[in-house]
Image (cartoon, rainbow, N blue to C red; front, top):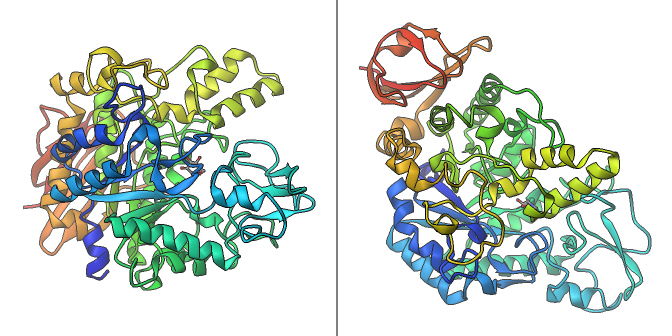
Length: 533
Ligand code: NOJ
C-alpha cells in the first residue's frame, strides 16, 4: 500500500444522520448548526472524519436520498453558509468531511427530471431510462414494480427505489459530465471525500437482468474519481461486490476508482435475507466472516471498511448480542472485535454509548418508506398487526434514525421542539449522559480503544493473523508490525478458558475492571488486549 492509501488508515469516520443528530432551532429536525455545536464532542471521542448523510435539497420521500438540487442544502438543515462554516470548523480541528454522493437517481422534482418527462426530444430527455413498455420485471427495492408510467411523456421510467427517485441514465455522456460537475462543486468547497450511494447501480446490466454491475461501471466510477482533481479524495462505495476479484477492480490503488467499499456479509448474521426476519446468529459467525475478509483484503493489499452499523440497519448489537443485561460488555466487545482489525473504522451515531433497537406498538411511530411498505405487504400476506410490527421493530431502518439521546432533559437534549420522529423507547435508560455517569461507560471504552489504535501503528499497518479456530467460542487475533505485537481477545460465551502465548504480555485494554494477565477463564463478552513484551 503506498503513501496515499496508508494515510487513509489514520481516518476514524463517524457517520452523522443530520436529521436526527442535533437540532439548533427547535423545529424538531437536526441541522448543520447543531452538528457544528457537537464537533468538540466528536473530537473528544477520538474520531477525525465525518460521513454526513445527504443534506441536499430534497422533498424527503427517502430522507434526502431523493435529491432535487445537488448544489444546495435542505432548508430544514440550514444554508450553504452553514456548510462552509462546518467545513471551516472541521478543518480547524483537523477533521475531514465526507459527503454522501447519490449518483444513481435524483428526485422527480430535480430540474433534469422535470424537463425530461416533458417530451421525447428535449436536452434532458435521455437523462433517465424511458421506454414505451416496462423493459423487464425489475422490482423497486421498496416494493412494487420498478417501472412507472408517466402520462405527460407517455412512457415508463425506471426507479430502483421510490417512484419519486428516477434512475439516471449514465449511458448518456451528458449525465456523466453533470455528475463530474457536482463532485467538482463540492471539491471546490473543500470536502475531503464521498460515500457513494449504490454506486454499483450506475451501470445496468440489462443483458443479464441485473440493475447493477453493468459493462461500463468501472469506466463511470473512474470518470468521477480517476481525474487529477479528484484522485486525492477518500471515497467509499456502497457497492455490493461479493467476489474479491470484483472488489479488487473497484478499490485497488492503481485503478483510480474508489479507496474502499463496504462489504456487508457480516450484517446478514442474525437475520434472514429479508432484513425484517430474525434468524439465529452468533458472534462466531461474525468472526468467521471478518477473518475471511481480513485475509482476502490483506493478501490483495486492499483497504477494508470496518463497520457494524449505519442508517439502513437496526443496531447490530440488538441482532447478534445481549442488548439488555450485558449491554455494556456486548457493545465494548463488538467495538474491540471490529476496530482493532486492519481497515478504516466507521462508527454510527449513538454506537459510542451502546444504543440499541427500540420498540413501538403502532406503525404511526415509524417514518421510513421501506418499513411502511414492508408493514403493508406483511398485512397483505396475512400476518396480524402484532406480527407485522414485531418484524418492523426488529429490522426497520428507523431504529437507527431516532433522535440522538444526548441527556435526560426533554426530547433527550436533541431538540426543544417536537422531534420529527418519536425518540427511542429506551431513551431514559440509554443516553450519553447516563453512559458517561456510569462506572461502565461505553463512551470511555471507545475513547480508550480509539486512542490505543491511534497511538500504535501496529493497529494501522500491522499484519493481521487469526489465532482462533472455527470451533472456538472466542475471537483471538494478532496485529504485528516489526517487533511490536498485540493480541486481541474477544470472548463470546461464559467461561472460555483461553491460555497460551496469546495471553502473555501486558494488558493494555479490557472491559472488565478486575481483569488480570495470564491464562484464565474469560467471562461473557470479555475483551482483553495484550502487548507482547
Ligand atoms: C442506500 C441508502 O443508504 C439508503 O438509505 C437509500 O434509501 C438507498 N440507497 C437509495 O438511495
